[in-house]
Image (cartoon, rainbow, N blue to C red):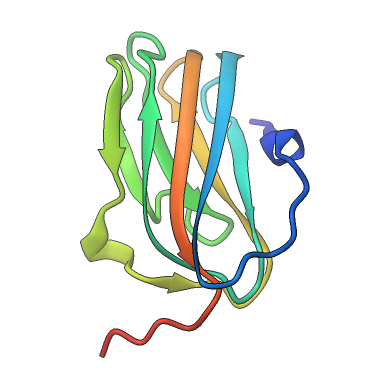
Length: 132
């Protein structure tokens, strides 16, 4: 299992304030089962309030999940990726998540080698969110 750093393909930017969206696309070319694709860097203090993954049919018997360095399926538990789909994050399991240290949001293709386009979209804020 390898880690693929896709975050180097993003344009350098200044940390946003307020509400913003982070989007990353990865062209998977025969990604082996279990490889971690680091899609987006998340800075300390950023809160993820929503998101989704869109992907091509990545191959028979493939699945995809999304998470971070603490939990590899925190945002999206393993779902079949043998057909193209739009998968929103599972709101009941995570909303919102404030990062207290720098991290990455990652996708992992499992079950078989995957080939196709994967897009991750995060809705974020750089200010604390109090939903109580």
